[in-house]
Length: 244
Image (cartoon, rainbow, N blue to C red; front, side, top):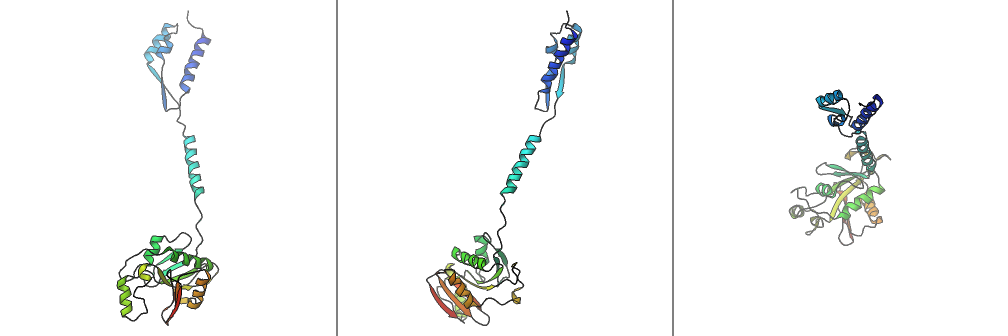
């Protein structure tokens, strides 16, 4: 005898449940084999003629999207704060400038700013020079460092000597061991400064004193000329001189 109606309904429910257990886009369930055991010949013929039935279920992407969002939140949370501005580096011969903070400019950019102004050659600069500028920036937030000279090629050094400038034949500049600069203090507590002509640089003697207070053990030169007022600092032996 054929199955009763309740039994037939239960079997169909079992088939439906099997089709619902799906995590893919589609699950194909063949019903002919399942229904072949049915006692009703009519149902068996009907199922065989239907071939296959496709049961679809939605693709769940919410968990993956949530994970991606979580990673983005982690990445955003890992971002560090921008370090506070210590000052501005300003190259007097090219009018280039760069912000000075605990991370910027990079060593490569710092060396490029202080490249030889005649030949354009770069050289490795002693990192203690960079440390000195940063230390001065911490004491004078927002100040402008007017860079007069950094690396000096032997060609430029000899040219300056022939023009009567007081430069050593074996200058610390040619070794990448010296920097000449002026310091212009900020006009406001926020660190704002105007164009180079709006404020006078710190007196070179005062600036040299501050450099020594920071524990600078190298050489210092103070230049007090009418047009050349700056401080020289190098990593050579401790010594001091005054130039005009």
